[in-house]
Image (cartoon, rainbow, N blue to C red; front, side, top):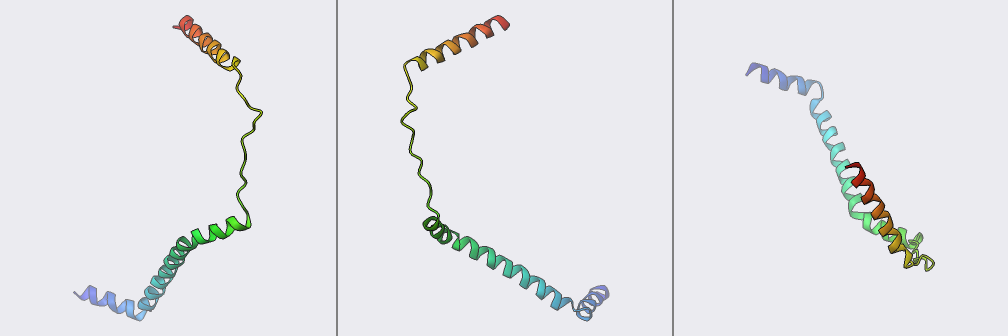
Length: 88
């Protein structure tokens, strides 16, 4: 028990209580700031969307698939199949 009492005396003499209160205050304030940022983020994003609107990209009508695309895919698949048959 003597060691425990001596430890508490050292804490009291060396400003341990004020240091621990200061540390806990800093951590508490940091957590409050993080919670506030998380809470206000949706509001900030709505305001930011009004200032800088999202660009809507319309699909290009010039990229139509032709009937030859299916034939090309079939030819590629057949070539890969034949190559695998030769290797295996």
